[in-house]
Every structure is written in C-alpha cells, then in structure tokens.
Length: 279
Image (cartoon, rainbow, N blue to C red):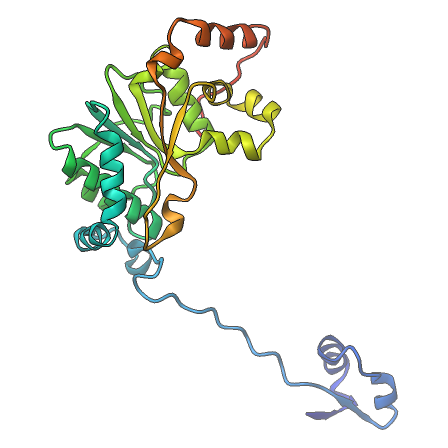
C-alpha cells in the first residue's frame, strides 16, 4: 500500500515497525511512505471438545461427570499393565488404599488413565477400603469419584499413619508428599506400599545434598527400598513415566539400625526440616 506523507507520524511509525529494513527517509523525499498492511491478529486455536478442555470451562458451570466409558476403554487397551499391578500387589495383603493427588478428571487425560488403573485395582481387590483426596477436584468430579470409592474429609498433608498394610497410590506426586508419608510411618515402613515416582531416580538425577536437606526421609529410605518398574502401558506412555511400585521389606528396615542412623544424622540440624505443606 502507498500513502501520502500527509498521513503523519502514524504511518511512518507503523512502517518502521513492520519494515525495519527500508530507508523511509529516502522514500519520503519522493513524497511517499510505503506502509505494509496491518498485521493480522493471530487467532488462537480453539480446542475441540474432549481434547484437554474442562467440562466446567466449556459450560461455565459444574456439570455431571461420567467417565465410565473412558475407564472401560482404558482397561481394555492396557490389560497388561493392570495385570502387572495386580500381580505385584498379590504378594502383599493390602487392607487399605489411599490416593493422593489424582488430578482433574474432567480435563486431564493422564488423570483419567491413572484413575482407571486405580478403579481396576479395586475391582481386583473387592471390599478393600479406598480413600481419595485432591483439593483440585470440582463438585462433579468429587461426586463421580465418590461413586467408586471414598473421599477423605480433610487434607491430612499426606501424614496418614497406617495401622496395617496400605497402598499409597501417588503417581507423579511431589517429593515432599512422599516424604510426609514416610515420616509418618518411619518405624513401620514395611506396611507402606507406594505406587509413585522412583526414589532411585531422584538420587541418580539429583544432588544428594539437596535431596537429603529437603526430603530426608526419602533420601534415607533409599537404603532399604525395593522398586519394581511399571511397563506395558501402551496407549499413553507418559501416564506412568518413571513410575514404580515401592516397598520396604521388613528385614531391610528391622533391628532399629536403619532408624537410628537417620536420627543420628539429623539430630544436630537445629531446625525443622519439613513443614506442613505438601508441594
């Protein structure tokens, strides 16, 4: 487009923005200023329904949620993983299941797949109490979860002390959350089975000093933890990326030596190592 210099500074400024390589002063000696058309506004791609969009965000209100068909589909696609998890748990007499941080079921594919696995664990262990807590659950999500299992009434900061063998379903949780579980059951780790991130991976890819300072129970538990890697999740590999089944054999933690070594190592710290927050 060509416009007269009478357009003033506005035309020159826009030209300078969009055409920095042109010599505008030279052009103005001929009485004209070259101005490119205004840049078109980039339109954001609107996600299609069902592709990571919250039902609540679409409709502007909390709506009934039903993921039964998704759970059934996931179970059929990844039977190998479900069988593997059940096989690992069959060696333990699980009396209770606690799930922390399941995520946004209405909008997150990873959360849906993890919840489907949890439902399948319950189906293979009928009658086993299962409790879920996640502050991000909407009213409809909480209602749907409660149709399959119980909801913890309050945030216990992952500091639940167990009375018998308990499975903690904590896929992709924070280190602090794992540390709180261990701290609350430090004298009875053999009763805790965790489906979560690999502790050995923390040590391999992180600083020992940082790990020991921020999550001391995770750091010291590496000496007795046994990890079994999950595999066979075909549809969405990232759902259980770096996820393992962790257990702490009683023989490895018995005799008080393991506990005493940790207490001696942290006795002179002089300050609280860990707070109540879980993230």
